[in-house]
Image (tube, one colour):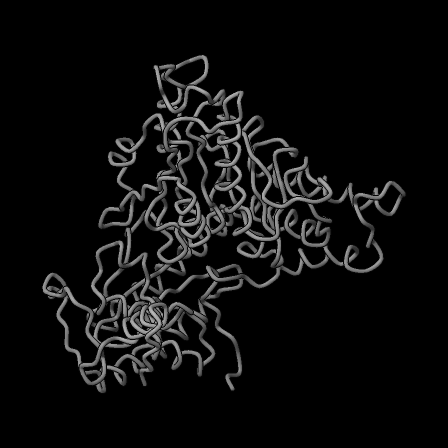
Length: 462
């Protein structure tokens, strides 16, 4: 059992800030009222929610009424995509109740969070066309391809502010300008009133622009007008707040249908009794981040760069994944060749160092990182990837401890590895290779088992 914790996985979740806990405590005990009740206990709970909305709106440069609280960022992403598509479809019903002509379309990047990609896949099954815009080698969305994909059938564009594996910062403000330029082609409605246009029945200018800013909120200024977004997703536990509470910014007038029905709370967009302690904690965490992000970003970037330089100097055959500068200040994603990332994670865990990895068996699906794969990295590189994400309590001592412990672990793992890759070898790699005994990689075996099970063969592989 390690004596101390050296936590480098803030992209997964962050420890609760003690200041946030203090703000929450009254609403976990004596201030337990239901904000829908009219008596004083309920009114105080309602005022607490409004105060938290003020805090978040202040950080985003929007109105408090444009903040809708959800149970998570995933729910907010679902509300954004499903809610917008449902609303536009509803607008396009003919007077006789029949559907509008044409197939509607949404655009996402291929490295979106699974909370986006899973919703897009579900919408695709419902007849919505989904276009996935590729990223370039540095991980940035190809803006020319995004602009070319826009047409009169496009109702929504969703591009993450910063992806959760490499921390790459997407040009959200530039995308916002591209979307607005497309919408402004008709100054009255934003829509070409052409004969048989699939958008001719919609009174709202499309496409709606959404970004998931969950990872970015702790370190970036997210003024919604400067970004040009209509919808923006946030998550409290990514910035020192509690788990189980997220939010969706909804620009006033943006068409959105609820995906949860009930008592009609939060302007009838998200029914259910509000999580008052969580909302209060979210507001406090957002306010703290807004006040401290400048100096905290500089401090964390300095530590991240120290970690990166130390690893590159002490360990040969290391590759940086993603853009070298256009990334969040706390992110370092590298591939250490000739080792298995999961094995490295377990060795570090024994020493009290907590990191994450893009190795194939790091997720329940047993698939290798789709983000790193989208960047063009071969399986062997993805297999040896490791993600360090720093945070508020990370110190120089934590970084130095990693730099002391990591090189001997890498040396030990390379001694037992069957691989001996060179940095210029990746172009020759096209098929995934196993690291033990030349067998099929475990994620491909699992995929084959699932396919056979669906077909009813039920072959059992050991």
